[in-house]
Amino acid sequence: MPRCEVCGASKPENPAKHQALLRCTRCRSVFYCGVGCQKADWKAAHKIVCGKPPSSPVLPLKPNSTSTLSLLTSLPTPPKETKSCGHLCSPNNLPACCACSDTRPILPSYPSYVDGVGHTETAARDDHYCPICNTKNYDRWVRKVAEETRLKKLADDARKAEQDRAAQLAERDRIKAAALGSSTINYSNGDVYVGETLDGERHGQGRMDYALSDEDVIYYEGGWANGKHSGRGKKQWLDDLWYEGEWRDNMMHGVGTCHMNAVDVMHGHFEFDEFCYAIEPEEGEEQGEEGGEGEGEGEGEEAGEGEGEEEGGEEGEEEGGGESLSAAWERMSQSGTAKRLAVAYTQRESAAQRL
Image 1 (cartoon, rainbow, N blue to C red):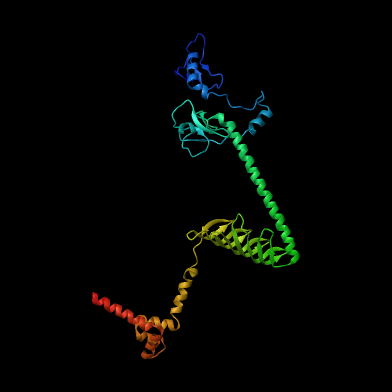
Image 2 (cartoon, rainbow, N blue to C red):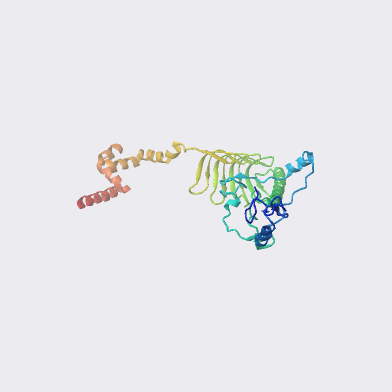
C-alpha cells in the first residue's frame, strides 16, 4: 500500500478533494497525502533526485503481434541473482543487493564521477546501483554492453587479420623452401628451422629457433608433422619455462614434464595443453644413479678399499685376491686410504680420552 513520502499517511489529507494519494507526475515513484507534504519534500530533497522514467521503446498497441514479440526478445536482459537479503541484484561480490549494501547516510545529494564531466556533488543515491536495483540505469547498462561488444569485435578482427597475414607469410616461405630444397629455412618473421622437411614443410626431426614474440618462445627441438609439433620434443620459453614430452598438433599431449620454475614441476599425463594427472617417476629412474654407485662399490679396487676401511686388513686381503698384508697396506698408502684411517683412529682415541 502506498504511503505519503513525508508523513507516512495512507489516506489523502482532504478526501473530499482527492480520493487517493497524490503521485509525483514527473517520476511517478513517490506519493503524498496532500499539496503541503509534496511542496515540503520538493524543497527538501525531491527536486534533486526526481527524474523522468527511463526511456523505453514504443511498443505496438497489440501485445500479441509478431513485431512486439520480436522487439521484446531482441532487448538485452541484465543477468541477476538472489542475494542474502532476499532481493534480486546483478551478479557481483556483494553479499546483499546494492540498496541493502549502501550504508551511507541519507543526504540530498552525493558525490560521484561522471564520464566526460568529472566529479560532481549532485548525484542521486542510487546512481551507481545495478540495472536490477535501479531500473533507471538500464539504458546505461545497455550502452555499456554495446560498447564492450564493439571493442571485443575490433580486437577479434585485428587478431584475425594478424593471423591471416602470418599464414600468408608462412605459405610464401614454404613455397620458397620447397623450391630450394634446403634443410635450413629462414622465415620472414625471423624464425630459423634446421632439420628434415617434406615439400617445404617441417616434417621429421628438427629444431626451430624462434624470434622473440608475444609467446616468448625460445626454441623447439623434436618431432614434427606437417609443420606442427608431433611426437616427442622439448619446447623452451623465457624465465626457465619448458616442457619435454609428447606432442600432438602443437599441443602438449601425452606423458611429459612441465617445468614452471624451481619449485613447480609437473610430471604426468597431458591432454590438449592441459595437465590431467601426475605420474610417479619409475623406480629405475629414481634409483638408477644410486644403483650405479652401488655396483661400482662392489667391483674392482674400490670394493677392496671399502672393505679394508670397514672390516680391517683381513677382509681387504680376501677382496684383493690373496695379496699379502704388507702389499695391501702399500697399495692403500699410495691411494691415501692409510692416511685417512690413521686420522680417523687418532680422532677416535682423542674422543675416548675426553670421555
